[in-house]
Length: 167
Image 1 (spheres, rainbow, N blue to C red):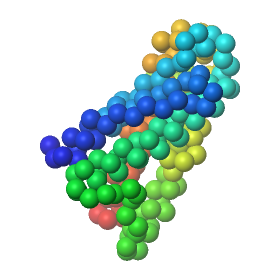
Image 2: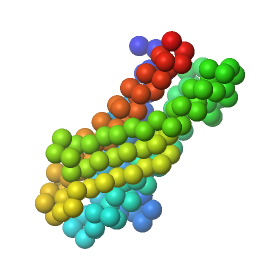
Image 3: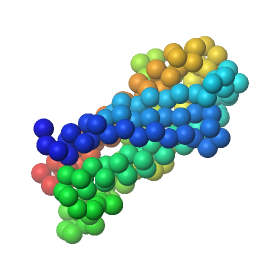
């Protein structure tokens, strides 16, 4: 395994949503964990948790990209703080198409759905009654399952897009 792959496998970022009711962490490439602030789960509405999860998604992605660029900098032994600008028409086409990718993830029982367009516009949907039906630990497992599915869908679509444009 190369240095960059090792750094990405060891990546660890943690964020907290505005208001502090929900935090998230990403380990490696696709292991997402969320946690509610102590004693808060039972008092929150699905709509509020949807908004907080979307905020955690945005913050985790930003933290992940910062950690990614640090890993690339380390591997290349030179500072890298953003993706390289497009240099060919293929690059321009790839970046434009990637910005329009819609990745989706859901847990097995479909109580949690996550969708992101271009890794910028996040939408989370929680089936009505889910927060009361599931204990906190059961619910967080469902969110983690949906988030992992979303990340894997995003990676698969980007790989397919690369094959299509550069193939």
